[in-house]
Image (cartoon, rainbow, N blue to C red; front, side, top):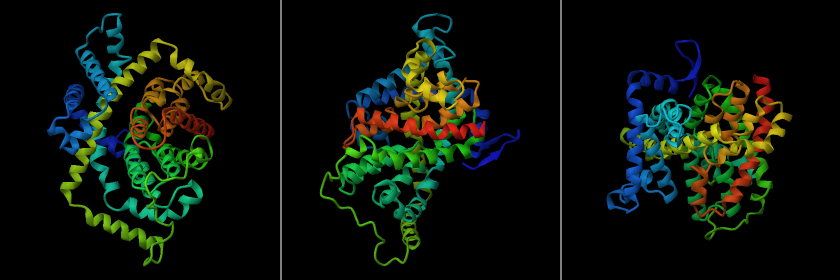
Length: 430
């Protein structure tokens, strides 16, 4: 993830360089690969509705294909869209099919977006266990325990959950938080705060967002701003509705440990190192490393790519041929103009759509001429984080005491805070 200069002298990251090399070698096959992946995803989801033993007994197959009715519909739509686009059906017409397959809608998503995502996902997914499985989270989490309670109103043990979300993946962090809540380690308020304020888009996805808006060279400062916004949101939002009204009660009898250093350790560094070494000792070697990477890749290939195809195509149709997003974003336009954001109307139209899918705002703003506008949308779309296609949907499907309205309110709070922070910084950068 370290920024480096490529052969042309432009700044990028190593993952992107590897992706470009692979794309150059097999670029012609990538659209067909995407068609195959989305077709398999749709067919297997339909098969999984019958809960066959071979899927339900396989952790990877169950995670990839056992989903609710809404997600089945999305994956089936994605398969239909991708086949129509790949075959060029309606490319010369003017009807609904032509809207789906047009180069500005389905064609853009398939040939410009999915062909990049399919490579970046597999590379980053394989490399991600290097961050997650060798003690880094445990060590850093132990070092941060003293700041968690006073700053964020959560127990020290939440540090590992939070860092897992930030460095790893938001859904993984939410799953950990749900597990801790159901186990009696977090109260309803603590679990709600952690799930909604410490979930974050994975580093992999931030690369995708930046690549979509054509600003990979800004990765370093971009991710620093994303972290800053996330921290400020985590400090402020617990004092706002609805999180402030959540009860400090446990789902089951509380098991939370005191926020103090365990006996037998001189300091947090020694404790963190012990946790890290124990984590490494649990690792089973190179086989587990690649198995974990393969699981991550399959989850993103079969789960995220269909969502991007279906939701992204529909959103682009609505954005390019209806005024709906412009209407929904109108309340943000005065604020954006006050903050001096160029192309305020175009930026405003991306604000609400982020509640449905994280990548769609970046897709909608990708053709905007203003670098500042694209950068602001790239930051805000990531820091909004509670998109229903993934993190928000997982929260709603869990036992956490949060409903759609409350998630939407927190989403708006995060959006406003993000704008107030990123817009002044963007003026310094552009």
